[in-house]
Structure formats: structure tokens, C-alpha cells
Length: 476
Image (tube, rainbow, N blue to C red):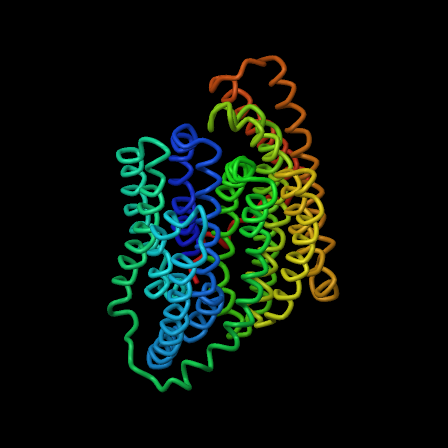
């Protein structure tokens, strides 16, 4: 399947994974308030950490490993079988620890945590890593879209007040499990499980564990910050932070989709020694991604203060204040993601990834500990900004002699100038239409899109370069 189609399907998969809970967010915010949103965020964050442990870095390691052996059916079946046996062992042990947490450790979030148990169960049958490694994205997108749409409908039907928050947890937990089971059926005929010796399964454990360190480090500053805000500043503050971050996480789905599609392809090209093709596609990806994330970051900063109270309700007005600076993490996430998925992981240089995200996690923990007590949720925003900035900086220090960073950074500068001009124009229009309503927000949004688009077209015309998207239409 072409990269263009895979990118489209993966964008759909990423977006529906986040967008449908986002669709229910305004309803939930008005139904359960800041405390309910914050309590659910805390329970889900802890559950997600257990899921990460259960998957043990497979979402990167599995994709790369399957992509490298997919042309040899016998080796593919053997590799798949070995990885899945390891997954069953690790996820099974993690599930037992999760149940221990639910029944013996969990506090006010205990009921919600219990109804999130199916998220941990779903780790036993999560095969996205195999499908993506085989360059199969369509079933993941379509089946998850159907399941999550049904879950969203159930939320509107059954969640009526704060006492129904457990239903919200149960519905999304069940949707995760059903989505994984439906995608597992797609593997029939494409790969076959054969029992392999346990020592063959265990050989995957060490490289997975290396990537797991990085995965956990990333989620220290993307998940643990919510736990820290809840514990230090209160559940209400976490509710404000959760809804601010939810928008940014949704937008980041576009970035992650491109990286996820390109990683198996570049892993396959890396094995074949096609270095020129790899370098060309990395440059094109960086150009495209920085263009996208700059538009998102400056666009969010321009409208966040008007968007948050309209979307979530007036109780969440401060979420807009948090959202504006948090949006700029998209630029750092996009830059680092291209390097991670198209340079570091395909070349099996996992230690570079580990070092960069561990440094980011350390910066985040220190910043959170220092800033959250006095600045509350805004302290977590600053900590996240510093952490996300640290990751690409460390990558630069380790790879500066190998990659054309001057070119990459020039993309950031160019699109940041364009984004800054857009932001000023949108804010000026906002002063002309100061009333907070969806029509005026729409006018501001259209203005931003028009200004950014026109300026980009002018720049591409002047430079004679433009966004080179041939790699999205080429079949490989």
C-alpha cells in the first residue's frame, strides 16, 4: 500500500483514538465538573502507566522488527511467535500487579480504576505492532473507528451525572479491548503463530526493555505530571490541566501518524542499504511536519482563551490560559519525532532515544517538583515545555555531526515567522469581534488558516522549493 494511503489511515486511527473522547469532553466537563474530570484523569493516567509496562516498548520494537523480516514468511512467523509469547508473559504479570493496585493501594479513584481493568487485559491481545510492521493500517483505522464511535454514543446515553463517572471509565476501557480483539482477527492468513522455545522469546526482552525505559521516561512527563498536579495542587487543578492537554494531544496525532507510517518503511530501506532515499525522505518529512506543527502551535496560542470556555464551559476558562503555551510543545514534539522514527529507531540506535527522553523526564520531574506547589497547573505546563525542549536538544548534541541540522532548524525559523504573523492577525481580528461565540471563533480560525496558507504559498514560490510530498504518493 502507498505511503499516502497508510498516512491517511494512520491519521484516522490516531485521531479517532483521541478525537472521540474529545467529542465527549464538553459533555463530560459539564456533567461531572472539574473534580470529576480530574479524578478520571488520575485513574486513567495510572492505568495507562501499567499498560505501558505491559507492552514493554513493543510499539516501537515490534514495528521495527516485523518490518525487517516481513519479506521472509518463515522468519516472519517465527519472529511474531517469539515476540507474542514474550508479550503474553510480561502483560500477564503486569495485569496481576494492576489488580493488586486496584484492590489494595488505590484511593479515591478505586472504583474508576477497577472499571479500567480491561485496558490492562487488552495488552494481552494488542497486535498493532505487527500490523504496522507489515504496513497494514486500514483495519486498525476502520475497526477502531467503529468501536470508539459506539463507545462515544454510549457515553451520551448512559452518563447523566457525576455518579455515572464509572460508566465512562468502563465504556472506554471496554472499547480498547474490543478494538484490539477486532484488529487481531486481521492477522489471519498474514502471519501464523507457532510455539517457539521460551529462550527465543526471551531474546526479545532486552531490546524491548531498552526501549521501555525511553517509553516510560516520555510518559513520566506526559502522564505522571497529572498525578503530581492531582497530589500537590488538587484534583480540580488537574481537571483544568487535563482538558488543556487533551487538545494538544489530539493535534499531536497528526505528527505521530507520519512518524508511525514512515518508521517501518525506513527500517525496511535501512536493511536494503537505500541511504539516499532515506535522507531524502527525512528532509521532506521534517519540512512537512514543521509546517504543520507551527500552524497548530501558533493557531492554538491565538484562540485558546476563547476556545476553552466555549468548548468545555466557563468553569474551564483557565484551561485556555494553560493551552496557549502548551501548544508550543507541538513544535518540539514534531522535530524530535522525525529524528526518532526516521533516524534513531530504524538504525537501532536506541540508546540515543533513551538518553534524550530520560534527560527530558529528569528535567520535567525537577521542574514539576519546584513549580507545581507555587504555580499549580501552570507549573506543570512549564515543566512539560522544558521537558519537550530537552529531548530535541539532546538529540542534536548526539547527532549534530551526522545530520543537516542547520537545514532542519531553518524550517523551524521560517514557519515560526509565518506562524507569528498569523497569530498577530488572528488576535487583531479577535479584538474586532470580542464577543465569545462560535461564529466569532470561526472567523478567527478562518483568518488564521487563510493568512498562514497564503504566506506559505508565497514562501514556497520565492524559495522554489515548497513542501515536497512525492514521498506520500510513491508506492514502496
